[in-house]
Length: 224
Image 1 (cartoon, rainbow, N blue to C red):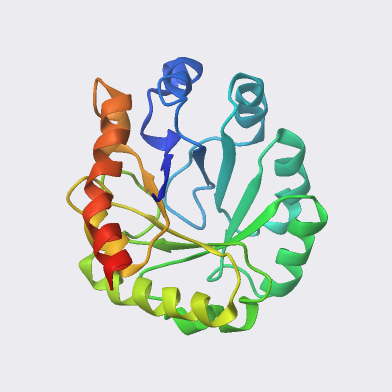
Image 2: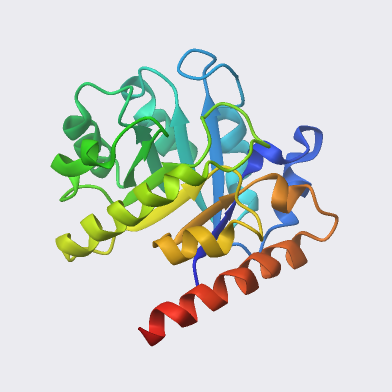
């Protein structure tokens, strides 16, 4: 089954510890860090992440929508994140950045915006641990899924197979029970979901609903 990573951006910021506990069964917790520069919004940073870290067993999956990212990598690792994902669009020296993330003991990810072609990642496929396809334009939660990104997911899934490496292929934006089968069939193995989970009263049922929605596509792929 795909990894379900609830996005804390959609949670109630006045009660983040409680909100985080409501999705405790999820193996990853997605943390959108925004600077109001790379994207037109500001979210939260290292002090909040550090305060939450002792209260969750989930892997903290930090998505840095900031520019520049390099000066904050060490602080992110010190705050307790397990994965650090940076954007290919805002990084002139991506190879070096991925080296730095690995040196800090974290998994290294690269996010790619809707207007960026998948080939932009061709030179770092030997280094990246996570690829995150933005299926909306980054910066705000609650946006509609961009169906045109399905072809990109398929292309990146093929690029991953060619490497023979165990690279997580994630999707972020407009992911819910309706879009889950589409992205799973295209090859996604990690689903970031915000309002589809935190917008529901029963978060456990929301997570299970997404897993159930992914199952037919997985069974179909297994039968091919």
